[in-house]
Amino acid sequence: MSPPRQPHHTRNQLISYFRNGDAIRSRSVSDAVLSGIVATPAPPARLIADWERESLLHLGLEPGDVEVLPLARARARWPDYQYCVQAVSDWTRTLLLRDVLALSEVALMACRGARYHHDGGQYGGMAFCNLFLSEDKGLDLHFPHAGHRIPLSRGRLVVFDTAQPHAVIKRHSHGFHAADFAADQDCTQVFLSWELPIQNACVEQALGINFDVDPTTSLTLNEEQVWRDGARAAVCPDSGRWCEAE
Image (cartoon, rainbow, N blue to C red; front, side, top):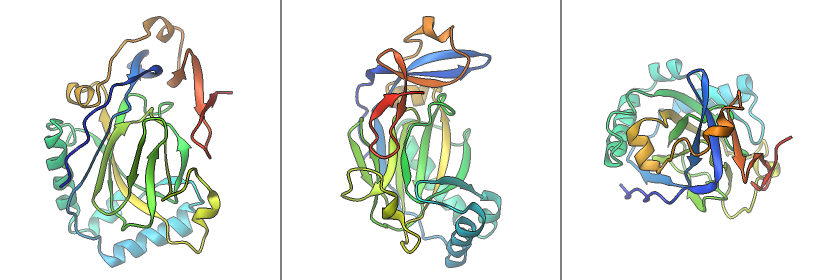
């Protein structure tokens, strides 16, 4: 197992406004990306074939899409599922995240690459913990502003702030290009994703989150969003550059 990365300082110009009950609360956006590799057995061949059929026939995955796969059906055909979950749990404990994984929702996801985006408009109150299940297909998880680029292969684990822009792109590429994920390319990645509550004290400490950094603006908002330098911001899906939200 490789050691986790140490948290970096948060970027003060980024603020995530997230829902806290009936109110909106503000917090910093962490550029920490905690990454490691754990030994996980390959999913059964028939399960991988099922994921491929589901992605092609039912999800209709297009380049850049990230969609949910049926987890309950997968667990019934996946004798090593609990082993994988235990491996993730053991790894997160090395980050002093204690039992937060057991208390968090998990989903099975598939992507055919992923355009640059942040998830702060829907999951601003969460961090993601992802376990990648597919073999190395020459893809990287790229955080253009936080300065992290992580090669994806089976057993790769990543914990990161949902408001930090990221994408899944071809290795050695400098941006997202749909042509890199053509129909004749084997480039679908399947992964388990846990939603870790950002207000959990262990998650807060691991990512270096500061809360209530802009309580005045929080009072004026009614939905989750990410601001950069005092204005609502969006991410260019191809380059990852910040731009003004429409």
